[in-house]
Image (cartoon, rainbow, N blue to C red):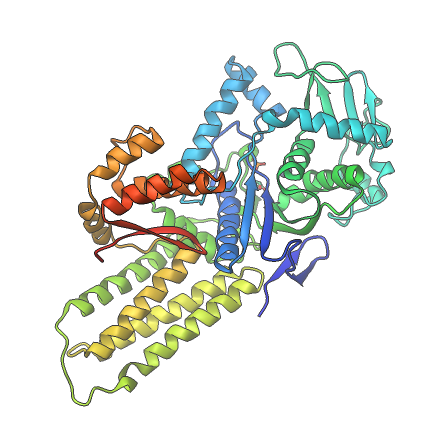
Length: 505
Ligand code: AMP
Ligand code: ZN
C-alpha cells in the first residue's frame, strides 16, 4: 500500500516518493502576524497538523517548518493605525498565534523561523536573481521580471495573458510588466528596515518563504502547503523566484487546502465575516473544531454554520459516550462460562482489524480524513452493539476484546490529533501524578507553573527532552528521563513521538 497525494502542480493524485527515503521535508506558510487567527486560518493549520501527524504515524521522519511572517505591509498598516511600532504588533500577534495554536492542540512544528531573522539570506537570493537577469532595481525597489521566467504560471495553470485579463492590475510605469512583483521594497521613515545594496528597505512577502524554506529544507523538498488562496500569486511567485535562483525543482508536492466559507463567501477579515479561533474555543472543545475539520476532505470547502458545529459536537459525544460505556462494562464483574468461546468476541475482533486497515487505506488516499473518521464510527457502532448484546454477562474474553477496541479507537483518533480522554480519566490521572513534577519543570523549563496541569508539564518536558536529543545534549535528555523515572514515570519513544506512562501501570 502506498501513500498518494494530490499535487496542485499536476492536478493529479500521485504516489508519494520523498526526496530522501524515509524522510519528509514539509513547509507550510505561516501567518502574517497582525491579527488573531480566524477559524478559516485555523482549519488550514489543522489540516496540515493532521497530515504531519499521519506522516509520522506512517513512520516518516518529518521535518516540518512553519514560518512567521513578522514584517509586511499589513503589519505596518496596523501599527500606523494604532500609533505603535510595527515590531510591537508583530510580537503581540506572534504570541497570540502561539497561544491559539496551542489551545487548538496543534503539534509544534520542528522549526518556526521568523522572517525578520532571515533578511540576510533574502538579500543574497535577490542579488542572485539580479545577477541572473531575472530581477531589476528601480529607485531602491527590486522587482522580479515575470517574462524572464519561462515557466511563470505553471502552478496556477495560467498564462501571463490570462492573468492580465483576469486580474485588475494597476499599470505602474516603474514595472516592465504589470505582473512583476516586489522582492525588496524601499522603506519609508519609521518603518522597519534593513541595509541592503539597494538602500534601506524590507523584503517582499514571497521572498521570505523562499529564503526560509531553502535554508531549512534545501532544494527540491517534499511538501509545500497552504490554503488554496495562496496558489496565486504567493506560491507561483515563490516558485518563480526559487527555481529562477537555483535552476532546480523547488518542491515535489504542492498541497492546498479548501477554504472555510460563510454562506457563499470566503471567511476573511476584509469581508468582516470572521469567527476567531480564540472565541470559538471559549465555548467548544478543540476536539470539536478538529472533528469539524476532519469530517470534510482537506481540499474541499467547508461551509461553516452553527449546524456544522452541532454535528461536530455530537460526533465528539458519540466517541466519549462509547468510551464511557466501555469503561462501565469493564468494571462489572466478569462471568465465567464453560467452555469460554473465543468466537464470542470474534466479530468485534474482526471489526477492530478492519477499522485499522480502512483507516490507513483512507488516509493513504490523499489524507481522506472523512473516510478515516467514518471507519472509526463504524467501530463505535460495533462496540455499542457488542455491549448491548453482552449487557447481562461479559466473559474475560469479551472484556479483552472490548478493551482492545477501546485501545484501537483512542490510538487511531490520536493519530489525527483527537483526544478522546474522558474528563474523569483526566482528573484521575492528575491526582495520580507526583507533585515533584512541578519542581522538575521549574528547573528544566523555567516556567511560571501555577496554572498548568501536571500532565501538561510532562508533555512540555518530553518536548524539551526531544529538543535536547536533537542537539545531542545527552546530559539534559538523560537528566529528564532519569528524574522522571525516579518519580515512577516512564518515557516510551514511539514513531509518533515520545509518550509517558506511570511505570506501576
Ligand atoms: P493569511 O494570514 O491570510 O496569509 O492566511 C493564513 C493561512 O490561512 C493561509 O494558509 C491561508 O490560505 C489560510 N486561509 C485564509 N483564509 C482562509 C479561509 N477562509 N479558509 C481556509 N483557509 C484560509
Ligand atoms: Zn509562503
